[in-house]
Image (cartoon, rainbow, N blue to C red; front, side, top):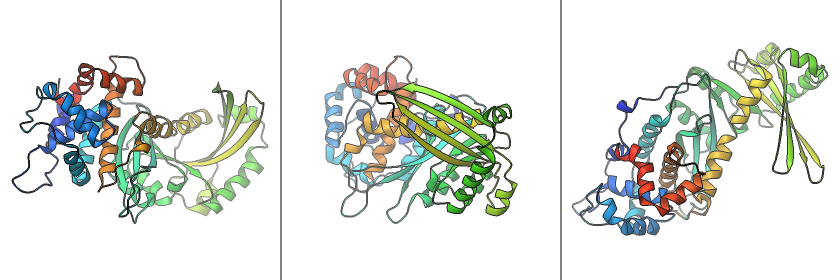
Length: 388
């Protein structure tokens, strides 16, 4: 996976200008590019609604006119709503992907790309269900690589292959939740020059049963010291938030019998992670066993623990941030595909905030700084949107 050089990229404003115009007639007053940019900038600065976008832009009209003409003034909330609900979402998605390509920096030895879906809870109306969006997340750099919204009569199983198709995955490890543990996805990932780590749960009952039996009879009885010497056992212990979390990984790569029985493309090994959580206040403990299959030709238990734990960054650092820093679960946007568009714009803002290193602050703190200081907000957006 490689990023384009800055010379090969376009500014966000230039990319927005390439989104095709869906409106017709001679009464168009506001540039599609300008409305999209104003929406992004207002979201960056704390706007949560169409009215908020319009109000913020009106309050900063004089400053904004330094960067765009706005001959008819600031769009009303109705204009924002109409455009966001009907603009070409595939074109905006392409704009999003080109933009984040410019942020990806460097060449790691091994990237982890997590796939997971999220529902925008309050986006349903009488005509369609709540929008559900499947996202690919570059865990190491905390960057959204791409997304696909799931149509009303579809599900994640139809969205995942479409998302995999548009991603550059060479030298990556793709992780996914149990719903995505399917042979065809494994084959598609391998065909993209990547490896996979898939959890095995009840949706693969025979595979789960065979792995459990093998683990209990041939792996767990073996002395941990022996397994550790063979790099087939590793343990981590974390203390915080009033608890102690211990994770033990058992790795077994002698799975020819499993490959013959289950025909998994590229299957190289199986892992068991035993997670034990102890509450410091009460001393109460709980234990959970999770099983995985993987395709890496060379693997050890310590490395597996590291790769698998990175998957949770899509939940903790992306989905949680969308809800807590951008209040996505409280968003009441139900017309057309506006929820999908605004989800993309929020992610664009998130990437710009994370890319800014001029201050040390949380994502929510940086967004608040943008609300308080037009100069800081423009500094965050300047490099990517307007060119430096």
